[in-house]
Length: 123
Image (tube, rainbow, N blue to C red):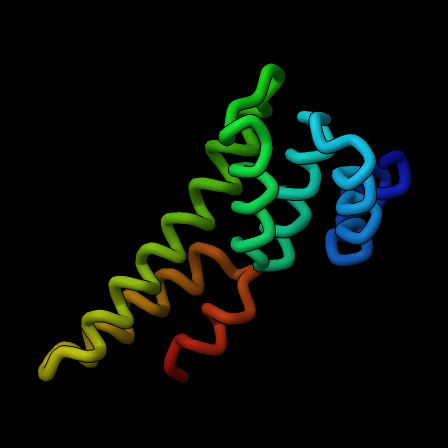
């Protein structure tokens, strides 16, 4: 976990993930390891891995939860993903293409770490 934590501190999130995943395999009950894994995953645009880490840990409950993490990173990422899903639904409706494109751009701007959102936003 030390290496993963150090890499997160150095903002090398993608490189930190393998170390943090290994830590979770060895110590699945560690609040710190779960939160670091989720943070690193979110900051490389991997909402799915972050969600799995969080929800797989005591139903998403933490003794020593980092309030900043939940309020800043997780909420920002989930709001952006929800906006992107709404944009996708709008895009399927006739006459809503401009609204869908605008919403997708907002989602991509709100969560720039997600390459998927950036690619989905029309250029």
